[in-house]
Every structure is written in structure tokens, then in C-alpha cells.
Length: 68
Image (cartoon, rainbow, N blue to C red; front, side, top):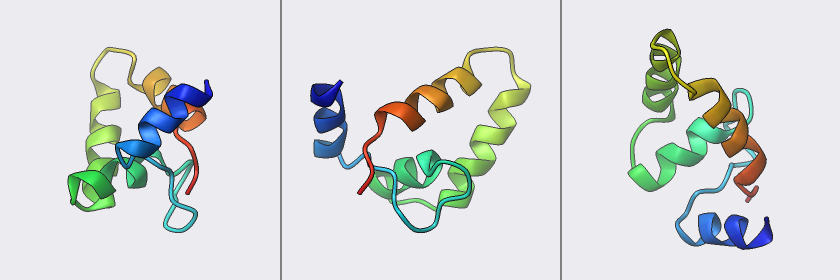
């Protein structure tokens, strides 16, 4: 799992220590995209309405994304 976390870190996908709401996944995704964390959070919440594995994906990213 360390190789995967290092690959995510190299791409700038890290969960920030500050500015988290739940696990910091949305804030961590927003940084490399250079967009608002609230926009990513809104998209995540709206996508939960649609059928699919969005919640599972969030939990997996929470586990796999390294902290700053």
C-alpha cells in the first residue's frame, strides 16, 4: 500500500491537515485541480444521489490518500 500512497503523493493527492470536513478527501482532490474544495464537496454529495459506488470510492480514497 505504500507504493500506491507514494504515487498519489507524487500527483499531489494528499489529504490536508487543515480545511477538512470529514476525511479531507474532497479538499485533497480540489488542490491539484485548482478549484474550490466546496465545489468538489458539492459534486460528491450530488453524485451520491446517483446509483453507483461513490461512497465506497470516498472511503477507499480516505484510506489510501496519504496525509500532508
